[in-house]
Length: 95
Image 1 (cartoon, rainbow, N blue to C red):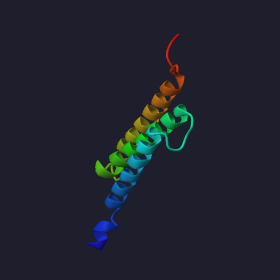
Image 2 (image 1 turned 60 degrees about the horizontal axis):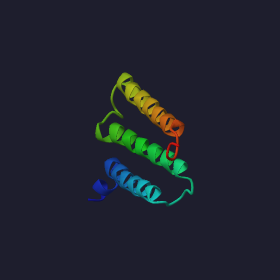
Image 3 (image 1 turned 90 degrees about the vertical axis):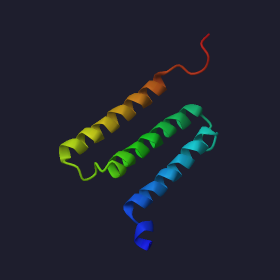
């Protein structure tokens, strides 16, 4: 039982739950006064969660280097693209 509780998968799962709680709190006004900073933080936390799911639950962590490289590249490009699009979008209602 002890080995199951302290296995890597269980610890990653607890981390994902904590990250979900953090994102939920950010979405409800905890942490930042500026909603754009909170939005970027939520996006980055979501992509960190995606990375852990891909590496640990889809078992890409021990895959061949080429496959892991593709997954890591997708992670960085997708996260950077969405953060850039989010920051470049106009804020507030159009006049």
